[in-house]
Each structure stands twice: as structure tokens, then as C-alpha cells.
Image (cartoon, rainbow, N blue to C red; front, top):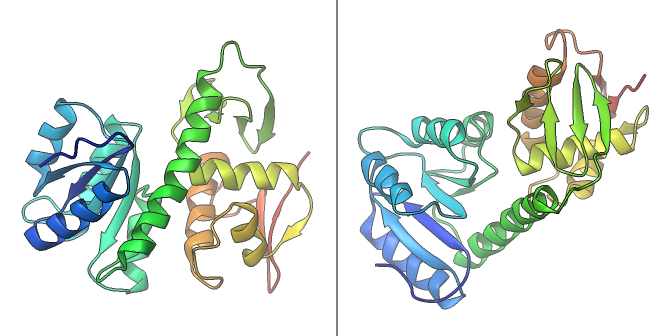
Length: 240
């Protein structure tokens, strides 16, 4: 079933027929175009017919699980991902974010909360795409560790000049650090400044994102010198 309404395209990957139906109907009523897949094979087939704007991906699927599929999506498509976990366990959220999901939501979820999270992620990805597609955007690169972050095109480049894949939330976090160099920022400040207030203030989401960024920009991620932990206070991006 695919809604005929104009709007963002959401691919719902879930083996639960009731969840697919109820979620699809609700999102269609609010302007989304919805399509469905029950497993990895159907998900790949759906991409063959045209990439969606965002994937709502269940963690527990038959055959290939959601984590494997999230890794595949990150390697092959520039698409937003919201991971759906079967519980509120922190470990599920941690793993989802580590493989590159833009956000997460736990079952059973409130459909209004899901819609808010979809809109939030899509706003960030649309802003990134708009900046990248502008005609001859003025490059504005800042040094972030061993890499360079282009604030105009929302891209991260390694020392060899090659682009390094980052999510929209990773870019938001790097941008906040670059604009507040040598200043200690608490986790709560980082949540607010990256427009991720829907995450809980003491959630590990920020810590996970920073660990991912360190692997990309630090020469020695185990002994970070660029994004430093300030015990009891938060994090500080060291410039220069």
C-alpha cells in the first residue's frame, strides 16, 4: 500500500502487519507517502523502485536484523534512518546510534511522538541537502582534528581530501563544537544547541555521537586531543 498524498517518502520496515498498517495510515493522514517492507529483501527491492527520504527500521526482523540493514543503508544510500527498538533498553539505542541511525524510538511508541521525530530528522537532512545543492556554494571549511568540515555543504573531508560519510546529527554536533571552540559545553547544552531536545538530558546519545566523531577526526581516538572530556562538566573542542 502506498499513499497517494504528496510529501516526504517514508519506508516502514517491520514484520508486524498491525504496526505497518496503523503507522502507515497515521502518517499518510499527515501528508507522508508511505511504503512498506517486511524484511531486508523487500527493503532492497523498495530502494530499487526509488529511494525514500527516511527509513523507519525495526531492530528485530526475521533473517537480517535491523542493525545489519542499517549498516547496508549507510554504505549504499544517503538516507535518514530512525531505528525502532523493541524496548526502552539503553543498549538498543546505543547500538542503533553506533551503526549510524539518526534517531531512535522504542515500541510501543506514541504516533504523535513518531511524527515529531520524523519531522525533526527530515528538517535536518533537508537543510543539509539544500546547502549541498546550492549553485556554487561558497566553501567555508574549518579544521576539526585531522579533518576539515565544510559548513556550506555539510561535508567532512579527511586528510587525503576524500569525503567521510556523516549523518545530519553528526554534522550538527561538529558545527556546534567548531563554533564554540575552547569552550566547555555540557551534555544538556549540546542537546539544546543541536536541536535534539527530544532526547533525554541524561541520555547517552551525545556520548555515543562523540565517540563516533572521535573515530573519524582524532589521530588517536582512544586518547582524544580534539574533543576532550571535561570530567563532571561535559566536552570541549580544542582548536589550534
